[in-house]
Length: 125
Image 1 (tube, rainbow, N blue to C red):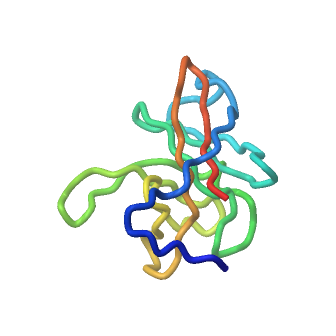
Image 2 (cartoon, rainbow, N blue to C red):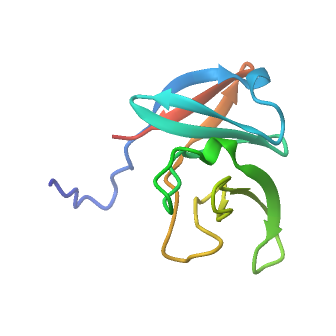
């Protein structure tokens, strides 16, 4: 393992890959994309695009893209997007991947953007 001890260095830049057209994701729903061998759940919620791992950390099943989306209010009463796994209904914050049910569980998250109507996912190696 190599440690970068330079405090002025930047984090690695993501490698962006197109996954689909924004029109392919109905608002409020998700799709699964295979990006560089990883299953990534991509959601179009409240005009934003979010990308998280498709693997449910509680069951190990690749089902998060089929989860139910919604919102919740955080401790500061700010409304935030969430997805609930279709299997055991555990909910996750779509921005951070943090489980809303168990503080020690998270979904990996990925940078996502829309450019000229196309959805792009960023991967960092």
